[in-house]
Length: 216
Picture 1 (cartoon, rainbow, N blue to C red):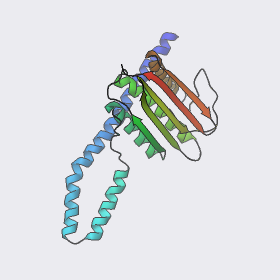
Picture 2: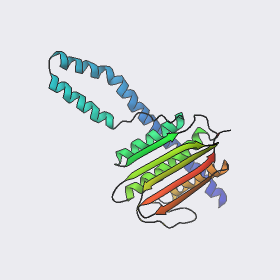
Picture 3: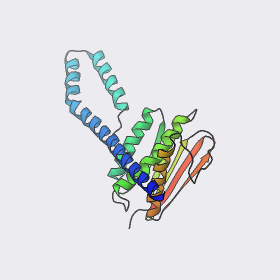
Picture 4: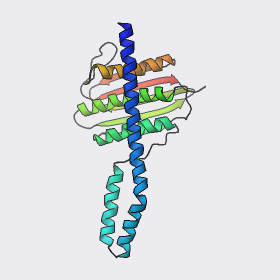
């Protein structure tokens, strides 16, 4: 039974890592597309201005601005891997109509590997997005990450439905087993590095928090 559970966890971690990588590549590809089109946009605007078509130039700029609102550049947290996974997840959340506030300042080199960091943060954000989509009213995610001494501190508050009961040390999710495995894997990584993680559910809100050794 333990071996089967462990193998299932490893399989899920691999699937999650591959999915996170695809999300990051998707944003990177989209940003490269905008860079590639930049010269074309300048030519179009130059043509409108030379022809005295100021209204059409203004409309073109407005349309470009609307498109760019949906494509956030990579965050600058200080950690390249964290920039990538956070940018992917925040873009996903905003596309789902979730208001996101992020305050993160983390060095690039951590004791956690890039894959471990991606699995932990990616799974916690997946859980927050899922909870927001199931909740009524305001949908929000407020995320804070920083270094305290030699420890990486993570705190996240997100909208949720009613207060959830614990089940086997975890809170139930709409997606059931697979999602629970993701949270369990995140906990396992944090505990392996000598850290702790805790969750709290209240009416309308859910909090996730962890502290783990991160720098020597």
